[in-house]
Length: 314
Length: 314
Image (tube, rainbow over all chains, first blue to last red; front, side, top):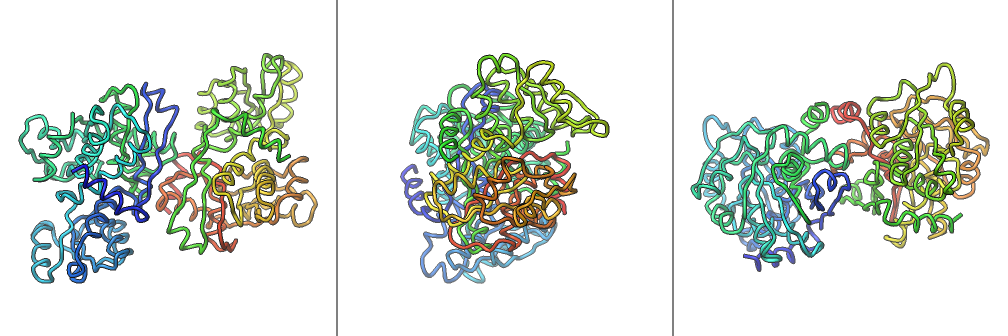
């Protein structure tokens, strides 16, 4: 798998941003370690998702590209697929619940994707996508459970290691496990002794429980503020990868997540969405005690004005 | 003066952040030029002010340091002086109006400075500072009208040119003219053909009028959202420097400023205060038509939650 990440990085060159690594003297002092934030909120379309989407779609055959692609997501993956579709001139369809936030819908439409609504009370997004796939011959670009998606997501951690050379610990947010498994594979490929820890909200702790019990757990519609981690469970592919490459999983409270977003806003002047702040939340709350050199993947910055206003006024 | 900026840069090494230069494909497309943002919102204490303060205070004699320093400001300069005072172990006094925002007062106190309140209806900050200077032998660190402050502020533009080699245009926010004159001197020293344009809010256009008429104009307490530019006029020292080194001055509307802060928040995931967004406002509104390679100084990111909430909910 590590070779796949290296290939993905070559494929992304000139298309994805090599995102900056940010540091803060204040954060280092508070945490008692040297912390390096890999800022995927500065990635194209505002999140790491661009990496996996581009890596996967760029490998489709001419025939597949002609027929078009489809995905289901109401979040960052949809925007990333829509943007890559536009860049590579592939017709893109996104299946979204009819109650999806207007702002995410608008962003996805702005990239030129066709949006297919469905009523989540009556059917599932997978069903709708299957029907459309069969009808039009679309290729499905799944949000995380796909080898090339995982490989693409791993390129952020790869860049971090190439830049910093050595890290004692790497903290990565976990939703469906695509970013976490990709990052862990990259980390172990670059530095086998680096400790990789996945971070989840306490309210969406399916992967943490799955990891510790080695049995797949599911949490449906967890009411966490970190909407990027509301995926019900790890995937068929990402679960074994997480078990093999990740050293530990930890959870953080909703309060810790809010405080991390505030810290990133007020002290580091960065716009980070709640899911993107999980690693910083783990450090600031003391849930993870860090020493030495610690990498943190900041996964994204797509947050609507209303939610950010609520957080910074708390 | 250019030599002074080079010396200042050496002095700042290891103390000030060499702030990142951010770019955005979307911004470039909207503007029709290649835009490079020099991000002083990522500077220590959240604004370029740290540069001038450190450069000036680091040059005080042992005797002056022992007696202490004083400044008057309710904004970014106060925080910067307080932080440098702490770093260099110099006792620091800040004269602030008793109606200054709690958040700025708290930040300045957190750096260990002593705050002296005054009633702006009854006296001026300069009067209070003069009395305290005479009484305690403090050295005054003025917010902009001082050669070493100007030289320090010029180091941001110097870094920008050292990194990018060539720029056709440089846009700089203007309040008291310390950042603008320092940036212009650095730009002309590095690339004499680079066109340097100062940007002010329409509601605080004293420097623009002063520039065009070559006579010092004053605007008291302008009601602009860009609080960093509410200085009544250019200084005795900065006015002639602006006349000599700056090519043009332009103004932007309050709406353009708000839209620039929104763009930087939503599209670039950066927290930028209204004064810091003036250059981007000039570009996005078309007030400045840019071609080629354009540098923009983003001066700071110290904005309170209430104001940012208002801006991103508009």
